[in-house]
Amino acid sequence: MTDRTLPDASALTGWRKSTYSGNEGGSCVEVLDGHPSGVPVRDSKAPHGPALIIPATSWTSFVSAVKGDLLAL
Image (cartoon, rainbow, N blue to C red; front, side, top):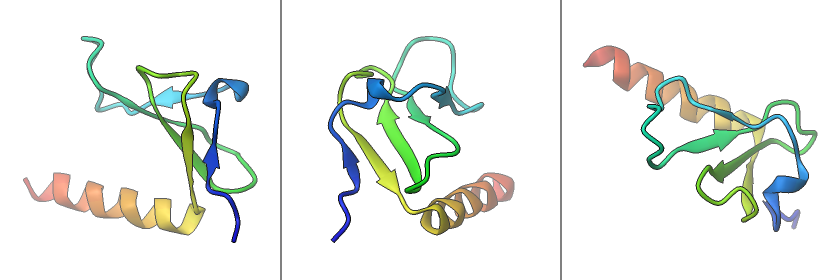
């Protein structure tokens, strides 16, 4: 089984927050594009903490579902 976590997410550069995240400094999820194993996801409040690596196909399905629900509002 392939490990789907990075123990220290700060080892990677190029993290970005969702455009839906506010600038108030609250809870935000950051993602990293272009990783060979999938899409790393981390908590912006814990940049030195772990990151989950989501398989690219699963991430694409998730984003499509979220966008579909947001457009339905």
